[in-house]
Image (cartoon, rainbow, N blue to C red; front, side, top):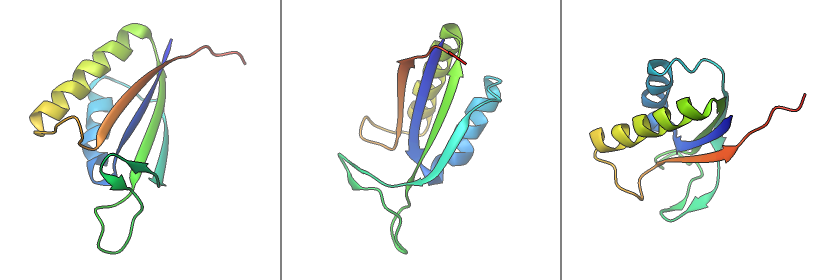
Length: 98
């Protein structure tokens, strides 16, 4: 099992949800208004700023994890996003213990 940690700008939430639905991911935890700092600067939300980040955590099979990674790679290509753009996916080992 793998845990995907997906970090993205709030403006991308509909695209991310559509991708998860496409791959039949129905169980995830979503955090909104996540502040932080990255290569492009702070991600806090102010009146005239592009908005804060969201994070989605989802535990999926290893096979589905790598299919999702391909899907996110495709999404970034379709949206014309580069490496520094605001969708990042991290894969962590995951073991349910309770």
